[in-house]
Image (cartoon, rainbow, N blue to C red; front, side):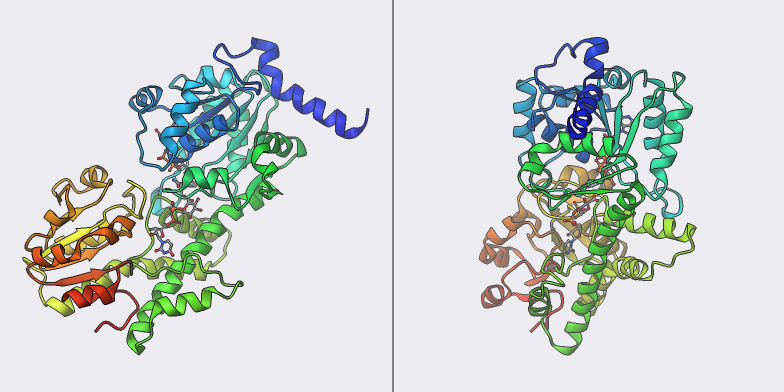
Length: 467
Ligand code: NAD
Ligand code: UGA
């Protein structure tokens, strides 16, 4: 028997152990061994639904009973393009299941993905308590060899801690494989990102773990997606380095935007021309009110904290964080220099989510801006196509409207804070008629300034000389 054939036989044996021991999962309909995804948030739900769509049988688990009940009925708790269809399709074809019984699901699976949150904790460090809880649960329920893949974003050394926790809590001392497969999807395009990624990364300390992962991802690899097989330490570094590099790019273009304003240059022209240099690249050179979301702010801080422990100064990352923290106040300053005191000023805000195509408001620059303006005494009236409900959980007293034009009635200023494409479709003549004072601050450089000026608006934007 040649080496390749022996290796494949071992892999098939490993993947099939639960079948041999317990028989097939009672709901099993696909040919592959069952997968458990622990943590059914943005990442876990998209991962579970997409793995099911690739042909695997997947149970997504969560401690949130309400969420699991909704999902079992096909109700999706988050807004994500294409996700609803994929969940319904795979629920129907009995490849996708939802459960709060994490122990049972672990027992019935060959492969486990950990996708629980790693939010900002004490002093900016990542809070690893959820992931360590899951490691303990896996250890206690590990009676047969399984392969565990961590997808949550974790600092350097965490995968080894997870290994120790599983071992410590496993009375049967069952051997297991452990790998780190960092996730790179973006909210708003996560299904598309999962199905057509730029690359897939698997960090593992043995070939077998990486081979099992590659088999699970085979349909994507068949499309030509590059698979980076790395050590665990490299994979941990890749995730934080990627998010930090993108954050640096955004903060860099925001600083250039400020400079452009001083010298009369146009940051859009500058970003396009520098981005056409393939060594720089066009993506992530959009200036604005600063990056937000559940990842860049927390991951850059956690990266800095992790580096500190090793005596490393990540000066570039630190600078990106500092620059980002000043973006909202720069916008407030511009408004103050235009209007003087903001007390009593009626401001309409378009967009509450941290970016377009999502209902997520975590670390949203729009909300930070709104809070600063409220603190200066401004009266805010807001609209977002889908993030209003989530925004009200953070700022319960916010005046929100279901029609954007109603938010603008009698306004002294209009701020565009999230670059929803649908804002381009607004009837700006009607906006003009409704507003008391015809001033628009486009913090995302989305709108066509020339046509707004031709209607009679005074327009302020980012990184351009405003006339
Ligand atoms: P999330 O907050 O949306 O979801 C986390 C889920 O885990 C929640 O539903 C929570 O109830 C559940 N959970 C917590 N403890 C649990 C436990 N013990 N057992 C089972 N479930 C438990 O988080 P998210 O946005 O999906 O992020 C998950 C991880 O992926 C984070 O580390 C994040 O940094 C990383 N990540 C997120 C994105 C993104 O776009 N959101 C992209 C790449 C990586
Ligand atoms: C980001 C990364 O892009 C993903 O690869 C990564 O997986 C994810 O974080 C994560 O680790 O969770 P996401 O936060 O969903 O994804 O959104 P992005 O599209 O990256 O935008 C982040 C923030 O930067 C938003 O506030 C956005 O408006 C802002 N941004 C983005 C800019 O201000 N300018 C740009 O040019 C691009």
